[in-house]
Amino acid sequence: MSRPWFTFPRRPGASPAAIDWRRASEVTWRVLVFIIALAILIVVTTRWTGWQGAAGWQSTDDAYLQADLTPVAAKVAGYVRDVPVQDFQRVRAGQVLAEITDTDYRASVAQAQANVAAATAQVQALKAQQALQAANVEAARAAVAVTAATLAQSGRDIAREQKLLATGSSSTEASEKLRTTRDQLVAQAAQTRAQADAAARQLGVLAAQQGQAEAAVAAQQANLQLARINLGYTRIVAPQDGVLGQRQVRPGQFVAVGSQITTLTPLPRVWVVANYKETQLAHMAPGEQARISVDAFPGHTLKGHVLAFAPGSGAQFALLPPDNATGNFTKVVQRIAVKIAIDDADGLADRLRPGMSVVAKVDARDGRR
Image (tube, rainbow, N blue to C red; front, side, top):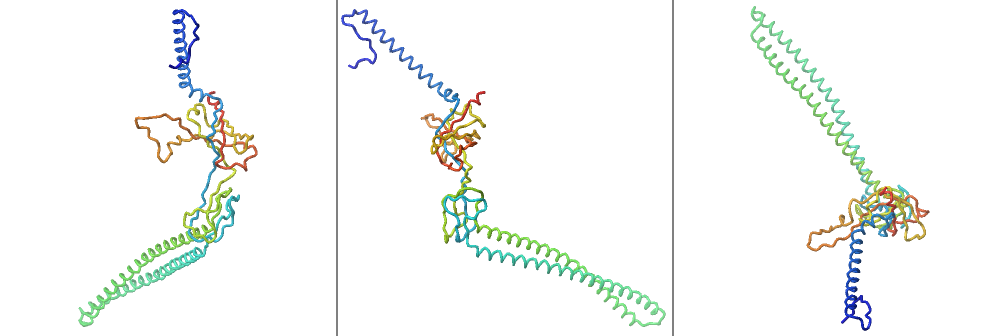
């Protein structure tokens, strides 16, 4: 039989009463120790979160340097002609990173320019036709006026012939000829008016055709602009100052639209993303001071301030977010990303790189004032 973990030593020859007293004392001490341990456990479990959140400086080693990593990709397809940069080279905005063979794209520009010229010539031809048709309209109107005058004269001739016929000074044949001539003039007048109306309507048709031709010119000019843009895309340039990653292409390689050429990191613009436990955020707020220690550079302390908080924990943005709807549940403290801007890099601005591990400390005392 094992010996109790807490017993008083027995004295030889002790009386039963003394033995009972000692046994009662052992039980009392055991109960007292158990109560004290239970009280400590309850206090720690109920107060730990408050103690952790009330600390003046909140620290975490789950923090890393980050920066904007820009993948540089091709916008047009073709064979790479030249890659005039090296891996990890510092470049300036607008510097050429790669060139694609542009022979086909220059031919497309020339073809688009010819299409614009042809469409413009069509517009000019329609304008000339409109001027010619306007002259035709004036001629048709003049013909209408001539026919109207001739018809009026024929009416007067018929009136005189009627008077002569009534006095016997003219024959019926002459009168019939004048009436026939008048009917011909009436038909001719209708014809000339119809021709004048058709000529005027043709002006409207030519105006519509001119509008269509001008729209075709605009379309061809857009095609020319697109061809020039695609020609410009054969020169892949740096969108901003920064440092390149590894090159993904070499001269002679075929690249499709969207093929990655390299990556560009706009150094030295870096910041810290620190994943604090949710229990550490009770008194944190944007603007609070921060101290950053980079593992790669011991002895250097970077100064910064809290910039922003993530809108949710990392679990909320996971590909398969957790769903604690089962019968078994284990509560796990979540972490919230805190973005910390670096105000003073302590002379290390050009040596900081995204991905470096850091220890971030935030002065949360201002949040309780």
